[in-house]
Image 1: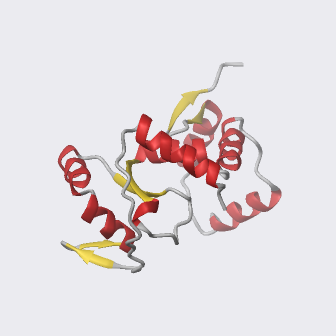
Image 2: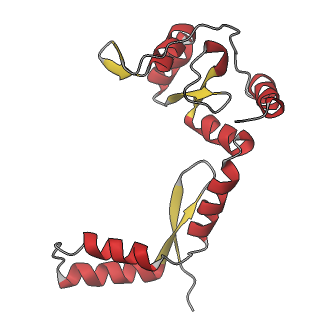
Length: 168
């Protein structure tokens, strides 16, 4: 459960920094699946489309994605006054700034970036999953070279890019 203090700080950020329109209404939609114009949506997505149609129209026209964010981070609280529409980047940033679980997520990203080693159990599971796959010798060689020469660098917005390792 997120504290009321964090929720209020998040609301101020949404309004003052991102310029978002929050709607003070207890209306809710708890349906698991709604079909609108051939699209399968959760109830809270249908509700958001009803109250923020211009955001969805702009996103469709300009080819970017809109996501519905639960202000209190509780996905079962589908009241309109707990919802706001955000771009994917805004959504990721809100979670990084206000979600109490984000520290845990940042730690995981950091571990990936610093190249922490897999556990024995993880190696065993990967090995098992590859048992029946037959790779050519050339493919094995290419994978080996690629693993030695590049690594992923993760960004806070959830994207990543590859970088070459420094020559040693």
